[in-house]
Length: 228
Ligand SMILES: [Zn+2]
Ligand SMILES: [Zn+2]
Image 1: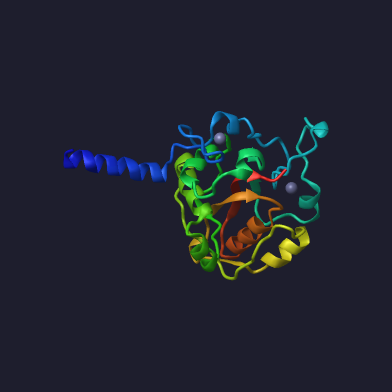
Image 2: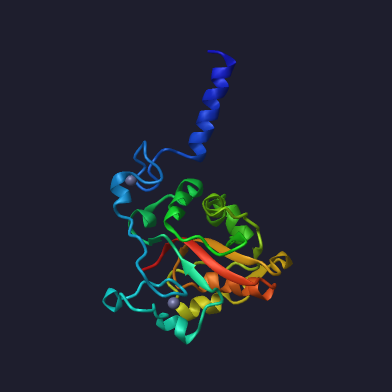
């Protein structure tokens, strides 16, 4: 075999590692990011709260003007608008998380943010060492192509916050207070935060608060999925 063929094969092998043509959920070969069966479990995000995107009771729709959800009426989050292409669940809940580049094509189903740049929600450095990859960064890099916006690392997680799962809304908010700082490069920018899943929005709101404090003009949020 010629050297050129060897190099070509090696390059294809590397490409398969980066963009594996396997379903990100059930690992079936040949289809990415999801096979037909897993893709059928994806539910597009229904109409909901015009601030945090929380799906609303279908019986209240179509309303003349979408109403903010109870939580956003009680205490508005720091971001202006959050949305996602899909509801969290099905194949999206079972997928491999290290496939950011392949999964970010799902942002095709999502309105583009009115922003100047994308800023992924960072992991705490200690957590990043344990995991070996940064899911939000991988997704942001993929979303950059879809939205035609640069990725700028504006956020720093200044203390580990542990798992949010199992905490209620108030506990999540308490736990995240002061967890992020933002670079002064955020000054005057319209920023779109990118993350994996939005649950209560407490993490995104804490990050948005840091960005606004650093002088950002406006903050939106895009996640791959939204908790129902
Ligand atoms: Zn599958
Ligand atoms: Zn809301």
